Image 1 (cartoon, rainbow, N blue to C red):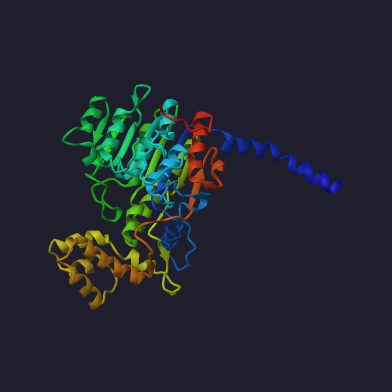
Image 2 (spheres, rainbow, N blue to C red):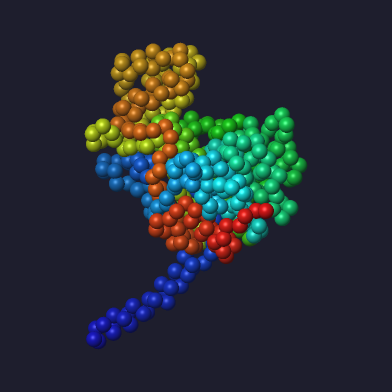
Length: 445
């Protein structure tokens, strides 16, 4: 009995400290929220990336930046009358509004009613807001946070929403960085000029982005989506854009909400392109690290990272061969798409492949690409991808999405609320709670 009392007294000495720490790191609502989405980043991608990063003699044990912050998983299904596997718009709308909807919907429910997004709720509370992506800024995911439309395909209308839909007389998004000049600069309307007239700084280069001091910022670095990470030279990386956004958003004493998307993990999955997929994972990991580093220094920032769905049915190994060879993938220095364009433009298939594929190619492999050099870029691209998938023993089951659950990573104040097995709508409901003090998803009238 005395021994039990002694142990109880010993533990009691530490209870106040533990409680205080829990209140500080978990229970206090965050001032800032950074929400990161790896589009298409299913669990096979995060697992494969661990293999891909491992260059030591150890057997695939090195951790990625994500691993230490894993807190749970989320369900991804849509509420579509015909399809129960989600697309990016439906998934993003669920995570942004807390409401399930049909595939292609952007910020609207099944009745086409506009639903308030967490970004809009943050703006209503006087916070600054931002969107940072490697796709067009009007693409499905960012569109679902900053716009409302019956279809993700209506990118011009969504671009108009970014400007026309105001909150308390102000533009709802303070920082917008990514691609999409074609959607913002059109014959009927030049939204870059309209934003500039309203005080935004409009930048189109890495240098101009680095020099920016304006808290209202529009940065468009490509006509459509940004150049793929592995081929990127002049356009900024996702981490660079993330840090640039944080620098400006942090000026608001009321805090901020920032959406960051690694958009092209999904695009690589659709193309069954493992080289591009691992390149985009590298880009997204660095952006995640930028968010975590900011949060650790700031102490008032919640970071959440997840995926909207998985893409491609990607498998680590295939056909009964219990090996996956990431060294093959690491040895490829440009994307298959980049090489295909060079070959289509007239370069020798053998020359281009040997220049950028740093493993021993067989005569048959070179011939398989050379034989289709006069066909479409897509055909050449597919031929190159087939070689890499075969050599690395990478499997794919589809060019579309799959219905897998996806991981959730979190750090900072209230991060424990995002642990366990959630639905994708819970992301919005919990963020609404942190911003508004209520989980209710408000319908815009």
